Amino acid sequence: MSWLVEGLLPMGEVSLLGADGGTGKGIWQAQLIAYVTAGKTSGFFPLPPQQTGKVLLLAGEDDPGKVLKARLTAAGADMSRVMVVTSDAYFARTGSPLCIPDTSFAKYVGKAAPALVIIDPLQSFLPSDVEMASRNQMRGALLPLRAIAAKQGCAVLIVMHSNKKQGVSGRARLADSSDIWDMARSVLMMGRAKNDGKIYLSHEKNSYARPQQTVLLHIDDVEVEGVKTARAVFDGYTDKKDADFIEERRVRTAETRQD
Image 1 (cartoon, rainbow, N blue to C red):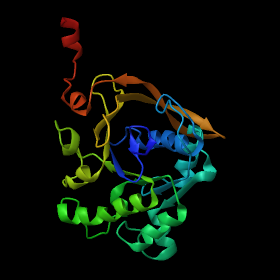
Image 2: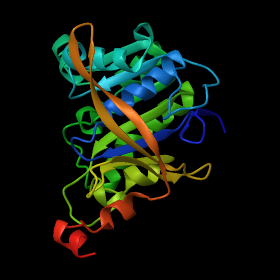
Image 3: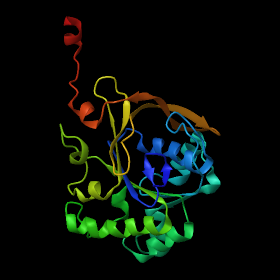
Image 4: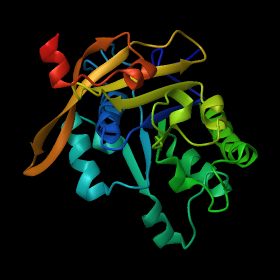
């Protein structure tokens, strides 16, 4: 098995990142992009990559000029190897949306020849008639993505927002269709601990190796060339998984005092 990030992101395959809103999924991605494009090691990625490469970031939410450039620069990414395409800009230029099942999508990835493709969020690059609750429709929409990853030999990371269901963990926190989880060869879940507010990144599934330990992190405010942005900071590891954090009982001040 060939890995873009050893034991975490396999080459030629589709991986999945699910995250609660406001946990800093895009800021952590900046660390990943810095690792892939510039070989920048950190607590998140302590071992140097076997090889560096380009990253194609398909962004449906963050503005490249206002948000992404400063964030990626703060993480240490090689900006000359980062290609950003927003769903709005593509539509404005071509008059049609950029959707995963379209042949234009495969041609776009092939021309870019990236080591890593990030699709954030997945919903922004699905056809409007695809219902995420439908297993058949989601499988039909994502099969071309697996074929693209295999043909190009690149790693693909699709990003999704978690839902608002209470007391559920793992695949139940994502879309109504379990096909996304099933098709992904590696699955990461990002959330925030109830008591100390620490952000965690839990490796929930790995089809080719043992899942990695859960990473703990926080977000620092930084300034790059006079522009305020943010950077993810590594805090350590834990053996706790997403379910452990979800089931964690919130400690009340009165209970702590009594103990």
